[in-house]
Amino acid sequence: MSKIKEEVKREPIIDAQEAEEDVLSLSLRPGSLAEFVGQKSVKDNLLVAIQAARKRSEPLEHILFSGPPGLGKTTLAHIISSEMGTKVTSTSGPAIERAGDLIGILTNLSEGDVLFIDEVHRLSRVVEEFIYPAMENFQIDFIIDKGPYAKTIKFNLKRFTLVGATTRTGLLTPPLRSRFGMFYHLDFYEPQELVEIIKRSASLLGIQIDDGGALECAKRARGTPRVANRLLRRVRDWTDVKADGTISREIAEKALDSQGIDKVGLDTIDRKVIKSILDFYSGGPVGIESLAATLNEEVDTIADVVEPFLLKIGFLKRTPRGRELTALAREHMGQDTQRIKP
Image (cartoon, rainbow, N blue to C red):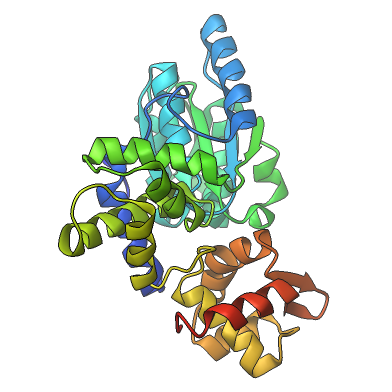
């Protein structure tokens, strides 16, 4: 079944990056748990669950992956399908507008197939209510006719595994969350893990890169494999035009500096957020709605894309009165604003 594409959001910068990832990085996705780098605890638990399910000849329980974008939630859904020897059908919460859309998807699933729903927290309430019996009893109830002639018909489904992915766990309703049998949170990657990913991607793309070049890309990749692969392609472009041969640490530094990616991985929009908090709110605290209005950005862009990494590296803290910059962020901007302007 063809992939149902997620509706386009109103964040042009982010959308352009996501589209590039979908088109160019599909072939870079690992095909098995053995090839998947990082998230050791998640991998180990998934391996046990998969081996147990195969031993009992039954589908896996429904799985929920949470965490910031680009950490491998979609990849793991495809790996689960591959390891179980079944097909995967991918869609997204916003793409399923009506219960009827879901009926067509569910009735086409075979025994043990994986249904992957990205941004599962964005399912409409009607669709969410409809999916409960499908998850629990592998049945769907639909109504034909209206008024006194209305009838409810039960339709039995093949046993399937629903894999949900969300960047906003708190927006999941308790009834939906409770129907998942396994919960896994994906965290940011360490630089050495990203080095492995970058070297593997470079090998697949035919790019020559040494240890220093890979480490420099990894340190600026925001702890995210998707970003690491994107930076690798940008460094490759710069090298093809301005240099020759193997990507070294010096070449990677020059290429990434030219892209506005600083030494800790902050890009233009990150520095724009930090600088706005410094200039307009004296370092905070400031509410996220006020900050989004100042920047003319969507609240979701700041909350889902910018904030998690700034919190992770200790540049931002949340207080009861709003977001506030830390001393680390002030020091970093004092050092870097002279060299790289936002």
